[in-house]
Length: 268
Image 1 (cartoon, rainbow, N blue to C red):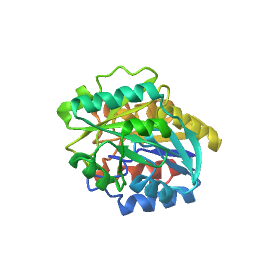
Image 2: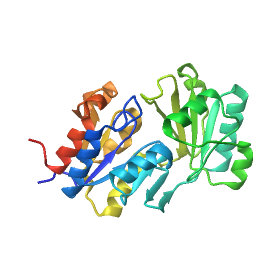
Image 3: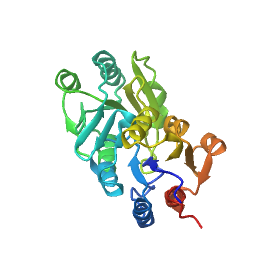
C-alpha cells in the first residue's frame, strides 16, 4: 500500500547530480511510483524551461510542477500560479547589481534576461539548458512580469549580493553541485516559497498534506519540508536538515529512488 499520494522533488542535489544528469534508476522508479498511483511534481528554484521543464514533463506530464521557488506553477502548458514581483524592489536589485558589477538575471514565465552575458552566466545557462537574452533590465521591468530575480555570484560575493533589504520580497540562497564555483540567491514575492506552492499543489490535486512527501537537500527546501507529512532529505545534504529529518541516500546513491519507492509502498 502506498504511503504518499504526492511526491515533491527538488532537482539540484536531489534528482540531478553533479554531472547534471538524472540517473536511469530515478526514471525507472518514477514510472513504478506513477503506476502505483503516486503523483510526482518538481519543486525547484530553476526556471520553467530547459532541463528543469524537460525533467518535470518526463516525471509526470500533467502534475502541477513548481518553479522559481514557488513563484510559478505549471500543469502542462497551463499557468496555475504566477506571482510577479513589485517593480520598485526590482529596480533596487538592478541598481545594486550594476553598482557592484554583479550578475543578476530577471525571469519571466518563460524568458530570462541579463544586462550582459558574462562567463559565469553563460556557464549557468549551458549547464541548465537555458537561453538567456541580453537586454536593458530596466526596460524589461517596464514591459514584462518578472517572477524572480536571481543572483549568480562567486561565493565570496554572496553576502554583498543579498545585502539589500527589499520590501515585499523573500530572499533565499542556494547552491548546485553542477555549478560548485557559484552561489545563488533568489528574490521572490513575499509569502511565496516552496512551502506555499506545496500547499497549493496538494490542494489542486485533492491530496492531504499529511500524505505528501517532499524530498530535498538544502536550506532552500525547508519551507516545503516543514509543511508536508513525509519530509525526506538527502544524506549528503545540508547537515542541519539531515539532523532534523529522515534521510535517504545521497544523490550519487540514487536517494530519490528510495524516496519514490517508499512513497509507492514498494520498499522491501
